[in-house]
Image (cartoon, rainbow, N blue to C red; front, side):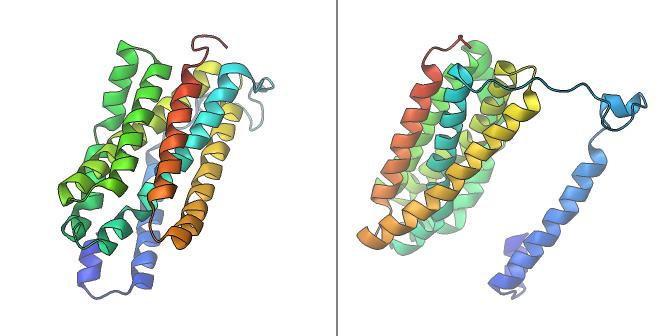
Length: 237
């Protein structure tokens, strides 16, 4: 859609407005398609649902929350700057128009794929493996010298991003079954914090070094630590 409107001559500001309008349209469609909650179907008054238990943020859940924040930090640097990496390197220029197409196509089956990995191993193991695969993609994005290498990095990013997101939230629900809303809220906050810190750090480091190599390998380290955290004491709460 963005490519279509860009061909019509819209400026970057116009493209952002179009993106916002499309987002609102799809939000309305999603809200319409979401079924009502069971309590509402039974006619319970607002606020009459049972109160959630207080969450205990320790052990495996605490490690998962930290790992999820590190994942947010680890993926966002590449997700933010991969197009710029392609644009600034003449050897990688041919890949630029296709980078996000590859990310999107790789993301389509990723949730199903990583859920299958989890079923055959465990949720923590699948989360850890996906983080390590993503770390390879993040590192590859700044060391490759070929368009094919950059597109492979894009595929590894897209093929793990949504899968790790789903695996993390599923595990949070399993670790705090009596406080699922609180656990998901804390996970989202941790992820958001990582997302904010990643580009900020990358911006400072790229200005100091002239590239995204150090920032990207900081992201690689974060993803490796995230993988280790979810594997520590797995199965214990």
